[in-house]
Length: 61
Image 1 (cartoon, one colour):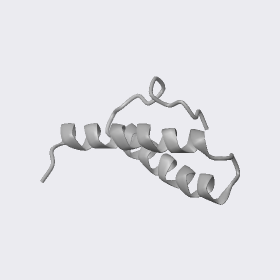
Image 2 (spheres, one colour; image 1 turned 90 degrees about the horizontal axis):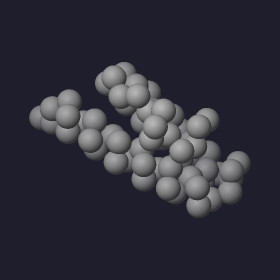
Image 3 (cartoon, rainbow, N blue to C red; image 1 turned 30 degrees about the vertical axis):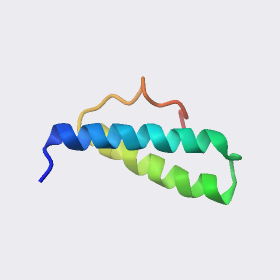
Image 4 (cartoon, helix red, strand yellow; image 1 turned 135 degrees about the horizontal axis):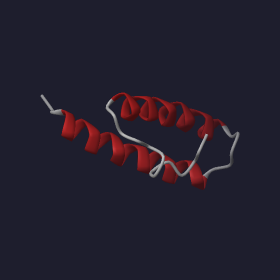
């Protein structure tokens, strides 16, 4: 079972990756909207774990 540090690390990496993908597609496209749901999920997870996402959030939505 992963510890909090591993969960935070993995979530930050996925948060960064999803933002990379979101920057490549047209805002409002179906792909963007699907990625945005995951982006919001990850933002909530990281915030609940005490991570301040302000510095790592490039999308700012």
